[in-house]
Amino acid sequence: MSTSVKVAVIGAGFMGSMHASIFAQSPGAKLVAVVDQNLDLAQTIAAKHPGCRAYGSHDELLAAETLDLISICTPDNLHRDAALAAAAKGVHLFIEKPIASTMEDGEAITAAADKAKIKLSVGYLLRFDPRYAQARRLIADGKIGDPIHLYARRNSARTEGPKRYGGKLPLALHVTVHDVDLVLWMLEGQEPVSVYAQTTDKLLGTSGTQDTIGAIVRFSSGTLATFESAWSLPAGARHMIDARLELIGTQGSFEVQCGDSGLYFADAASSREIDTQHWPSFDGVVRGDLREELQAVLRWIRGTDEPLATGRDALRSLALTRAMMKSAETGEIVKL
Image 1 (tube, rainbow, N blue to C red):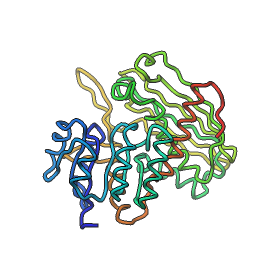
Image 2 (cartoon, one colour):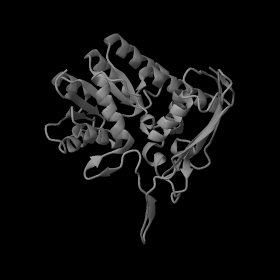
Image 3 (spheres, rainbow, N blue to C red):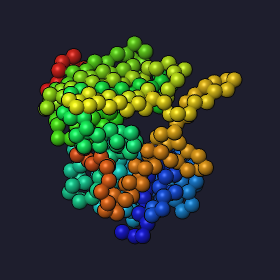
């Protein structure tokens, strides 16, 4: 590998533009290219970073550039083709969560990475939130004892997720899958054995998505986990994301409260919470959990051990999330 990790970002939307900025500003990385089927959009992002080129497809990118890492930030149903093409070229992969929208695509991606002997990680950035990482350490250190019950909530305003993803990405695959990964990460060594879920669509059904999904999962040890996700908070809700994780164990418990960013601004026209956690940007630099995650990806490419979600981790998260979706569709308990 060259002195700098040569990186390309595929997908020049909201996440892709932030990935490009972080890689361009990261010591030890060189942002080589941005790719998007909307070439004008790719060119706009690339123009912000000296030496970065724009391409209209991953095929054009791979024919023209020699790369160490590709970060895929396209819609989930478009991950497979780009990932398989990169793997065939021996390029390491980082893919924004979930790994794919179907198990078939996710399994094809992990199989291609295994065959090519490349590294594959998936973007579950909450693993880099120090609150969740510390909570996981409490479990690992035996402070909680045997987990009895977990409760994971992640609710946001109807003006956020539905506006960007409504009709394109189910609520469960955009929101719930974050907490599914966290719970599976924390309950290391336990396997989910059954799930029952329900959804409501009183508000957003006509836009092709759901108001909320609730699910109960039983694990092999008898532990229960309850999940609640919603895209239906009013536009004026105080929190951008009303999130928490609670665990009760035989020896202790913890609560991770992530609803309050700690910075709330109001003027004569509006009031809003300002992100200080995931990808706050100031002085022209994107910071927070996302930056920590992508910096870890660069270290991982160089051979260090990092708390990144592997392709196999991502398949487990996708399988459980899709089981929730199946249960909600059928009204039946799904055995795993």
